[in-house]
Length: 230
Image (cartoon, rainbow, N blue to C red):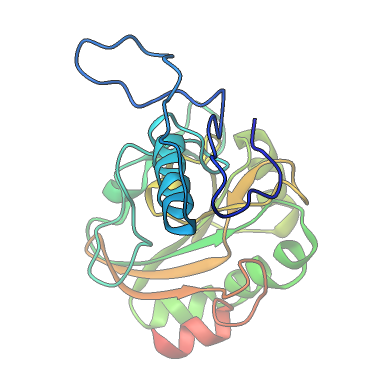
């Protein structure tokens, strides 16, 4: 256990008694770590750094768990992740990389179906503006949300989304995570959800990116703003 209020010059041992040490060759996993006796604030800081490194290696991290490799927020020039989502039903599979491989498209991310801003302004804005996007050469709009396909199908019908605006379910969050657009929304939705964003895509690659600074507001990713830049 961590001793409270360690003082300089005192021996500080057994800082964390339950954190496994990163496994070395020939060492069994689960071995308790050994930390050096410390006599200075510099040593204490060094030891804390060791603990933090160990926590990362055993997978104690964020909402989605440990990532084997770092990801970066999808940006201009990046390819759309080749991940399947669902359209009208779980069996109606769409690969967004394939679907946007030729031509111009808009991909819109929303935190949740039926949530107030998504239903009142964000998605209706794209439904209303679809013909204006079409006049600029866009072939379709995909609205992506971390919900199941039954929810997104019912929501799309209530919104009056036509053939040009398809609401798709990223039920596992895999597509959104691949684009590094997930955020911890457990306070509101109980799990990780998509940031609110819009991507202009041409031939499978991002040409413009609009991500809300606070993850959920409707400003830079609104249909009028994105249409202006399209």
